[in-house]
Length: 326
Image 1 (cartoon, rainbow, N blue to C red):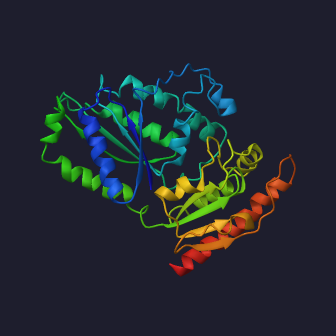
Image 2: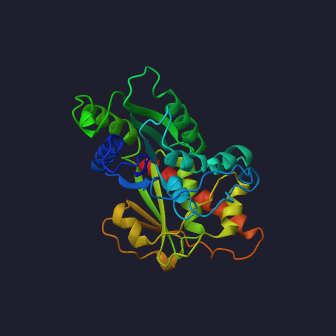
Image 3: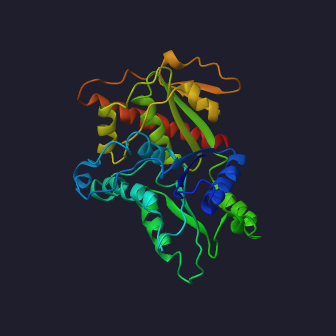
């Protein structure tokens, strides 16, 4: 599992940060790799409503989100948003991040693209507020619900606590420990016991990216599909992104990763090499498969679509084999 926590509180040791840290720690105990994005220190520019994203699928404001945040949200199996209540909503810093995710809404609803993890990604909300107003969290929950929908995450639930003035109030709340444990159990269910498959290529820019995306798209509930390269490129192959988009699958904001980095956090059960240059990774106890695929095309043409379809057939066969052996 890969879990991204969105920290919306400007306080370093606030109540919602206590909740976020606690939930992420429990998920780490279940084998999750976690990453926290601090919205308050990320210097995120607000949405200017140019609406250019509705045509291009990309935000023209600046590259602050594209440097890493968009990629992290796409990589995540679970997204946890944590914010105190400010005037019945989330903090301005986290709201800026949420608003800039309009690009995902545009790619989903205007460009009609599906993220490979659309059927498995989960979203969860954490919040605390000083008031005990009966509808204190209504606005926050509604914003979270639409945000999670935009980033292709099922709104799995929330933990919200009223009448919390400081960290001690939340630490001394007798229900919190059990609440967080229950949330960790709910979020990890169905994700922690999947077969982990690493699709390894040379640059992790085309073939292995397609293979991992197609495996996630078609069998994400049973396979945790990772991809990496022996010598990762600076960016993904645009021909691959376009070809996958032609089949309705969104590959924007992906970043090539190194094999060493990936296996440090997620040791695979199976390694699938794209060709024989990657077939001898020598990972102890790991089954190795070599597909002997042709090199990734470098020019426009039918070759990239044919490669995509060939990889799709191989992925289907691999999924059937894994299911039969389970």
